Length: 174
Image (tube, rainbow, N blue to C red; front, side, top):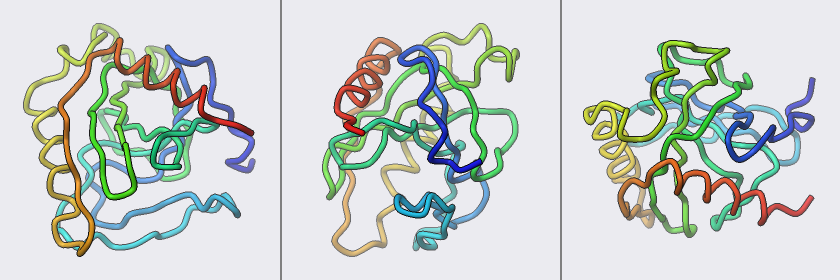
């Protein structure tokens, strides 16, 4: 099946995430090509940092940077690039970069996929160390890229994450 056929799902409380980059899998930045829908190597990051969670996007959404809504999915194991997982929002990392607003949604798998996270409902349920690792990664992952920058504006709770999903759905025009 083509990734272009994957729907966003039942937003804003549950949605599909297409995983591009697995957690802790090196410095390769994979990206789904918008035209071919193939998973491609975008680049090797210049910093020696690895994504601290599975990284992907919600299809059929659009954000201020011109891309779909970015999502970090926390799971007990790294996920395979190109797979689809149903997730639920628990928070958002507000940030911007040289391309514009670039918020990162924090999500967990649905209970069906991973019941061990069933009791986690909001960002305050996530260990502080995990949140610090995510923040540290995004503060520094572009440090060696000339002309690129990142500004973090803190974490938001589940309500703010739901608003981010709704806004990204509203901006999307097929």
